[in-house]
Image 1 (cartoon, rainbow, N blue to C red):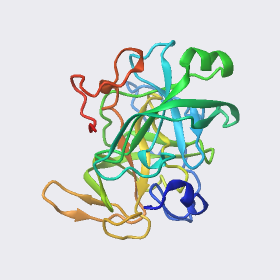
Image 2 (image 1 turned 135 degrees about the vertical axis):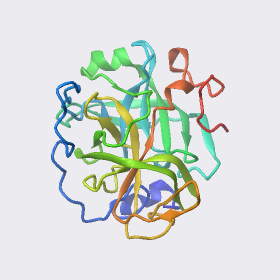
Image 3 (image 1 turned 45 degrees about the horizontal axis):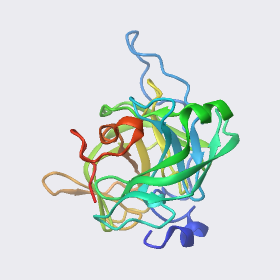
Image 4 (image 1 turned 90 degrees about the vertical axis):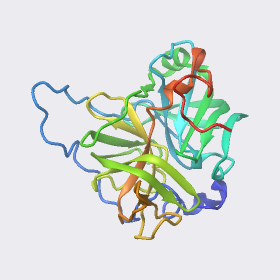
Length: 287
């Protein structure tokens, strides 16, 4: 985990943040949740449309609830998926040049085009594990060229029991399960993340699924970004995150995987998808 990403690519499938046990189970059924009541919204089919493949991770083309068609588009992945390597604990990357490319997928998982970044708008592994790239094209241009619309980031906190799907553009594979609960703090090596999403055991994500959008099956919106899992029962070490409760109690859940919530992100962007960490309600870490 502590090696530069490019040097670690050859071992990505068996080591590094975002890796579950190497012998991953097949994708689970579409949902393990109980049947919805008549008043509940009908679940939408979760597809690969709008997901992207990075050189070493997964990601997604995303919009904020207030984004407009002529705004520069955003791609979301993990902070630990940056081409420059893992940000150190406490480090926040803002407005750094990038020409990184992303393979854009359609609903069936076929690569239909290449998107290119103009900069890293925001990235960190402190409190959360996220990277947001600003692209050189707008949402309207992407839709016009490829017929693909972005996924929307939900601006409300998910709840336990929500049926979710982790959609990996890198592997062109989905993992379906439920939100099992939340870790007050999730600690892995030098990094600590707040209020992390814990999946039920059906989501056996593997190396390369890092950065995948975690989609609420009922709304089709993104509620988290997939980032890690406890590989072999280690306690708070690289590749073996532990949960730390508010009273300091440590819990290790071997084979369980996690994502970082994304509902906080929209409050930190203003007009034209411009990052503004001073906006009211923005709680993302600042440089």
